[in-house]
Image (cartoon, rainbow over all chains, first blue to last red):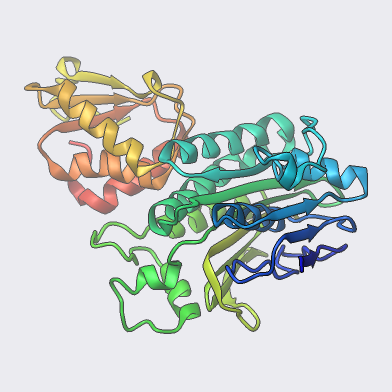
Length: 287
Length: 104
């Protein structure tokens, strides 16, 4: 019996986590991801979708994506790199990418430091080229992509590497949405290399945001997250009068950082669900 | 711009980052460039890193490249032509690792 997973309108959810995409070996096969009714897609949802396909393909599982019936949504998935490099058996229903500028920064798999270098440069370049009005966001976006992707690759240490994607929304308020994920050991476990007493995952993630807190043996490491926040506070919140929301989920931990109305707040997410690896969204919005 | 305090930087080896890229993101890239710089400096033991055309560096790159070079103290290192945002990142990284010994 095939295992059907239905991706309906809104199943990506506001934050991209709205449907369960299990990374488990005992799923019945073939696995069919039915996206025929799919509509809006958060970049985190697209990362999860592509990661799900890559993980099951790497495990030797038979998996197929049924393309969205709405041509515009199917085109968006293709433009955002969901089908890039996959065989027709897996994602044959998706059209060829159109090169649309709306697909700002499609899903990329990062397996080498060179990939991180390229992704960081490209994210900023694309922002300058496609959204000149948002060019002031380039420096903080560069810091976020480079530090968060660097961490994902270096500390994640998973065979699939790390994934990154970004898009932008033009409306009454302009939005830039960045998503980064890996299936590695996760932030809490990494931090516990140096701080084994920090058993609560949400508390461990919260402490990882503090300058100088690291899971490595180098006393001068552990500044990347803090630098991302400081630069966002200075360039986005104060100088550009934009708001920033950073959502970090890892293991059983979930932390939300909001930079809005001139101040930074850090708090736990609701009902954290156990999650392998680290999943971060970084959203900038004009206010 | 940071210069050597004895005004002899005209004799220093110049290391132009734009020979490699305009953006620098990772510790791995920083470690490669640090080793390359050390090779090029050879016995001169002083170097000026030129940031002309460099638009972005990550904090991790700045720490791994200039932070460690400055803190090690084997080579006298200065830097110039930094864009304001790059200068801010570099100075924070160097100050944090090397304290008052930064740069010279």
